[in-house]
Length: 263
Image (tube, rainbow, N blue to C red; front, side, top):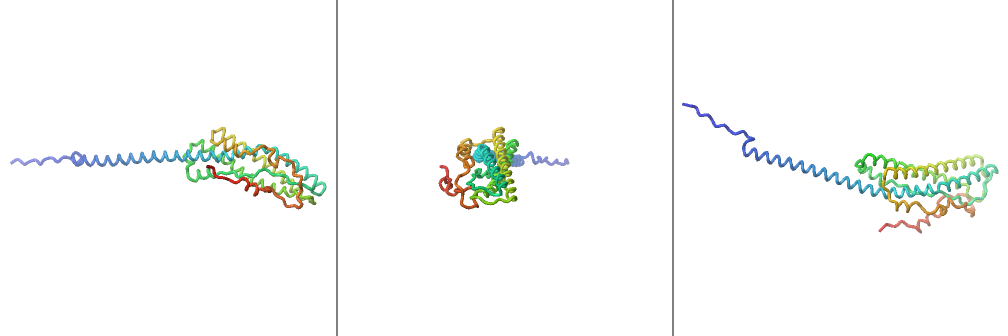
């Protein structure tokens, strides 16, 4: 008898069941790949929207800061002239041993130099999605904003010290004269530093096409120099006592010109 040869069983991947399985797996894999691709595209679009929103917000913030920087440059010569006057008064008083009656001497404007939008952009990691050049230039611009804010705060302290000579006249010691001369030097340095930082910040923004709002610049650059106390003559009215300070009348001024939400 001839032994029957058992029929050959088809290989699994050639069966209809296997082909159906492969099609199902392929569909799943393809679906996953498409989903991942769409997710990556959606994520990229989302970051681009965030970057665009960040640029718009920083344009307003930098417009305010650049406007204030222009104001400082405009007033720099007035501050220098006032410090020249104070240096002469202090030198004469040191020679005589007595301060003369002196009215209010004015002071440079005190401003807030904000960088809140930039700090938010960095902390939210939106900054990592800017191109390298934009990120470097924005970092440099806001470094000057930091310098301006620190210098303006220090400047207010220095001018508060200089206001110690405002009053009806009193004895001046050699030690205090030295301290007042030092305050004049510090005030000069701070004024020059702020003018330089303001100019450099503006130059970087223009040179590297960093967006800022021109209308906001105009709004915060102030009026004519002659309207500022630091550019006017020293006040003729002499206080009856010592202990004066900058920013006299600032509360009344703020009440007359409240901050209002834009429509």
